[in-house]
Length: 444
Image (cartoon, rainbow, N blue to C red; front, side, top):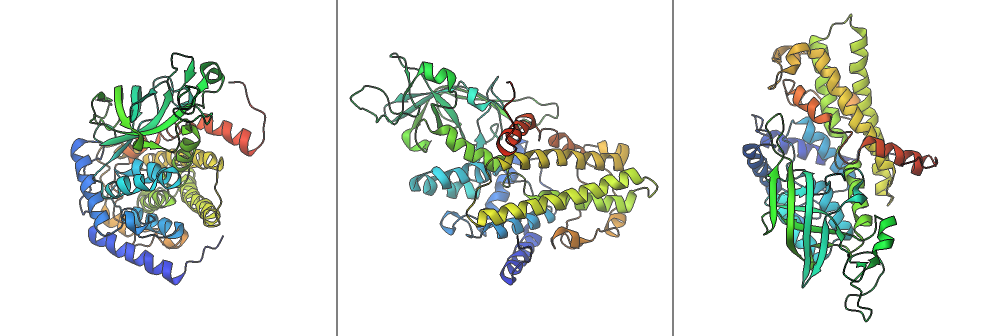
């Protein structure tokens, strides 16, 4: 793992820093989990895309700059250091797009990726179902063969961004047909073959013991006939999540990703991205740890050595996660995949995020519980900048936006969901134990 940046990478960092300094809104945008904020963040995506900063690692033909993973990570560091807005297009660019690059057709990439890069089309993730969260393979929503495509029925819940998004992607199970076979499972039987079995069919009896079979990965519009979007009411009044009710929603064959019946294998590629680097790049935590360290320098009680040590742990954790990510980036560059190690990654960043925010709230006291963020003495913070050298060169005094008055409480509440989404940490620990450590399977 080489931690020395080349002159070219340094030049790219400076270009990114300069662009962000000139374009990041001086006043934070409204929460992207509200209708007003969603629209404002969509406009921000359009501004990013206009200068090819929305998806820097994508090929130029789809709106990117064609940079490698090192430069992508550099951009992420600079993005969070600048206090830039959250990415409302995250589900699309971080989860669906890598799946399309790996398993989609050239036609799908040309049709879907450009509008994703500009924010014209925002994607919702439609995976979880009632009684089928981390146990994704137990999902019940169905996809029935129809002329020229599929009919989707069922219910999805906790669908991220679905309240205001344009389209969604998710897994659906082939429905048992009258002759006792299930469409969409992996047998390799061709459509219209003399057997009369639909493409990729398996018996319902086989499916009973193999729930991962017979799943198909599909994309669908949220304004289609038969789709009902019901925002999930939350205590904070921000309905970004939604339930989706599907009643014979027609989806053409061109919106199937990969082969029918092979959805589970494809979905595992998506979950690798969700649990691994793309969902939580180290730039996010480097920026948060920097803000926390600055608050400590300005407001911390030197006699409170326990809290001081927790702040130090947060800084060390951000640095450790950065190094862990660079190690994986080196492996990616060499053509490797991290596989089950993405579960280890997910457990770390999700629990680290909670600990960091708890430390900030304990440091700020009652003021930290204010919804709009604590009243911060900006001059005191500016004079207490934490040394940027520990953050790989990204966290210089000029590099970090003056965002120490951010809403730590809202960040804390969001962090509590980290051990749940992208597969609960209990499930992730099972994966680590069984697939990385070789321990025997526990009883389910």
